[in-house]
Amino acid sequence: MTSPVVIYTDGACKGNPGPGGWAAILRYGDHTQEISGGAAATTNNRMEMMAAIQALQSLTRPCQVRLHTDSQLLVNTMTRNWKRKANLDLWAELDRLAATHQVEWTWVKGHGSDPWNIRADELAVKAAQAIIQR
Image (cartoon, rainbow, N blue to C red; front, top):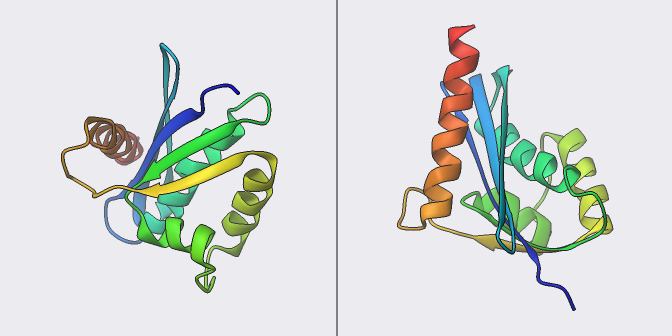
């Protein structure tokens, strides 16, 4: 069996709603890829979800994935059937992608000691700042 793709994601928003950014770091063996983006009018939850979506969409074939996020909403909705009250478009896309891959959803403490989570946060904040500066 091959090793899992390890992904760290984060979302950021300047105001909620407001300009936001998302970021993901994908790691497989010795390879690391950072991706990020943003939106002019969004929420923190949408950016957290978009980070996971963009990371999973970037995989070129079905994979075993260990996805780390500091969003309890994201982890618990995907693993414990928390009620979906908003962002139904993004939840549907996450369901579709999760069905393509074997995803292990893992919560990590935000702004904690995990260097990959810290880096994902830096990238998401930078992406949100880029939206503001446009």
